[in-house]
Image 1: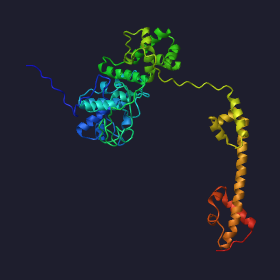
Image 2 (image 1 turned 135 degrees about the vertical axis):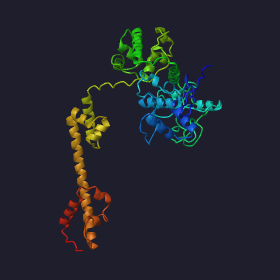
Image 3 (image 1 turned 90 degrees about the vertical axis):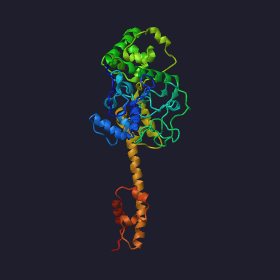
Amino acid sequence: MSEIPIAARSILNPVAPFGVGTPDTESLMSYFCRLALSHCVTTSDLARRITNATGGQFNPKWNWKSVSPSGISDTAEKWSQALTELTTIECRTSLTLLPWREVIAEMGLISTGARWCPVCFAADRATGRAPYARLAWDIGMVTTCARHETKLIHVCPACGRRETEHRSAYIVPGWCTKCGAFLGSNAYSDAAPEETWIANQVGGTVARQATLETTPSLETLRNCIQTLVMHLDGGRNAVFARRIGVNKSTAHYWLKNGGTPTLSALLRIALHTGIDLPKLLTGDLTGWSVSCIETRPCDLSLPERKRRKSPVINRSELLRARLVALNESKEPVSVREAARQLDVHPRQLYQSANDEARAIGERWRNIQRYRAEQSREIAREAIETAYFKILAEGKCVNLRELRNHVPKAILGSVRDIFALIEEVKEKVGVVQPRI
């Protein structure tokens, strides 16, 4: 007699994920939505089941953005583990980026909004396969579909709404949750070579993770970068940092302090050293040599890093000159307004140009006092005129009656209006009628 293998029983439907082991690997969020549809339950109900399985507490205001199940966060770890146990389908190493958790920093890794390739959705539907979202689309650096070399879109072409994939109780990947229109189309816009190269590198990394024999470690990545630094720049970290376009302190943080590079930095290393991103992350330098740099796409250029602004020479002298010009202008300004125009903090004006800042402030206070006196004089004349009209009507002069005879803008421009009314009464000296 021979043993007959029996598949393990699962609590939820063992829905097969799409594209595992290819650049078109399905994301865990897309798999989660299709799994909910297979059970005819809402995404909230399934999310509650998964949350209970992880030992957590379900939030009624559940939002997919706060979950980010496709990334490398702790939530992604819990969700992938729970779905693996409930469906018997391995989700952690295939539908998330968790295999690269030790070698890629979490900061800026996952996109904050949903994007998709309309050509991919159209191709899925044309081949009779259910449209699904790719894992690569959830990565922030990816703005292009590697397969079709088209830009990813994030707005429904039918209703113009954003975030159309994850704002409904029932989510069908490939269809807008607002108007129900199909998000696939054969119309596309060509992507730039830099965007296509990034998409290909990330797609290769996503395809590679399904066949990893061991989990990539930070030590292996650091040793790989140190080898590259030694061969290219003689072990000088600062020179290597200039080569890839990052601060030397950043390179020191990776190589000396055990820091984890971001995906953007890893792409820079891959671009300027001629090594593919999957090999860099796994520390595989097989077949690499200095000559590989000559074969890299030299015409590509990633966005330049933000450089620190150089200090302005004679900053104090420049501030003094600008303040003198403002003080001599026809229209006076306050110190706060002067600081806003010069793009500095008001305190810095007093520290760098104390006399000029005080002159600005004194002129502003004088003009404010003059304007207040003018407003008070106008209000006094208006109140005096209204005073006799109110008495002629046989009424008592008070603020309520004055508001019926004096414009609101005049009364509102004066501080301590009651004191001003008493001054007018004393000046007029007319006895008010008794009501």
